[in-house]
Length: 203
Image (tube, rainbow, N blue to C red; front, top):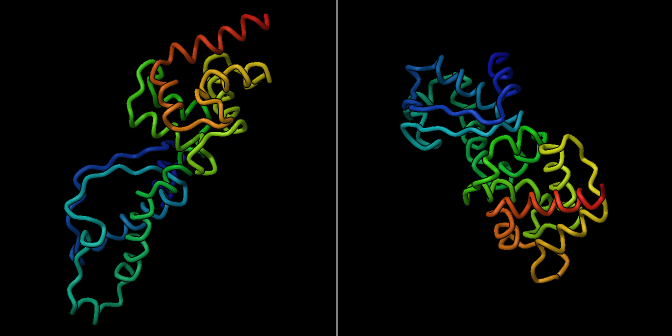
C-alpha cells in the first residue's frame, strides 16, 4: 500500500498496460490490484489502462467460489469496480484536474498547440462549478495559473481581468462558453499577446 501511495503522491496520472484476466488463482495479484485502486482513488490519481476485460468481468469468480469462499477479495471487488467506473466519470476527472497546482497542470500541455482533448481537460479545471460556463471568478483563476506559469506570480489586476474577459467573451453576455474558450485557446499567441499587452501598459 505504501508503494502505491508513493506513486500516487509523485504522479497525477498513471498508465498501466495489459492487465490480465484475474481469477482466484491469482489471488495475490487481485489483492494488490484492489489496494492499488483504493490508493489511486483516494489520491484522485488519473488512471489510464488497457485490460483483458471491462471492470465487471476482469475478476472472474465461479458461482461455487462465491458460495464457499471466505476470501475478502471477492467482497472487496465490488468496491473496486465501483471506483473504476467512477474514475472514468467527468466529475472524477474534473476534480482530479482541479487538485493539481498550476505548474503541474499546465505543464502537461504544449500551450502553443492545444488539441481538442487538451482543451476539454483545461475546461474541466476552470469550469469549477460544472455550469457549462466560465464566469469572472473562474476566469481569474485561469489567468492566475497562466501568469504563474509564464511570469512567476499570480497577481491578476482588474484591468487585465477585464481586458481578457472582453477579448474572450465574444457575445458579451458576461460569461465564457466552451466555444469561446476553445476559439481563444486554439491560437495561444492571442492569449500571450493579450497578457503581454496589458503588462506592457502597466509598466
